[in-house]
Image (cartoon, rainbow, N blue to C red; front, side, top):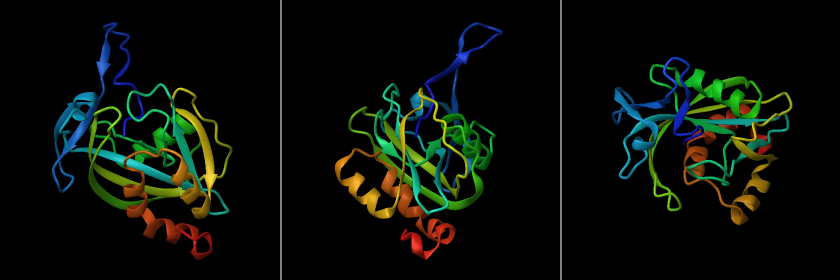
Length: 197
């Protein structure tokens, strides 16, 4: 689930763009190497480590984001609160907290691990492939969201009913329902039975 450009900002020492590397993993999530970000998503895709974050407000509503239109992968689609890739050697929890702040300007509270899910989702629009071993996290957001416009086009807090309505009429990321369904047990534990997740 790319959330940054294919290359990093210019390196001050060399003046050239440094490639962003992802951790390649085996089917058990054990690191087996690295690959440049865009190449890892070229068909048929290389299995790599990723994360997905689901944050809820105090009313039990899920924070969705619409990916910025300028993204090279899945631009303009709605998805979970935040998703991306740890840098090689970076703990998924740390990466999830870092990117949530970078994209949405908030630090999650009570964020907890919610398991992992492995999937293979081709993106018909771009031709890129998501072969991911995804670490899931759930938590609370208790301060105003301040999205980075280069990353996020819009945000919305939704109840399960509102999500169903939005999902029926708007375009969502190819991975959204896979990661949400995998995270549901932890979501229910966090939000309680009255939230309806």
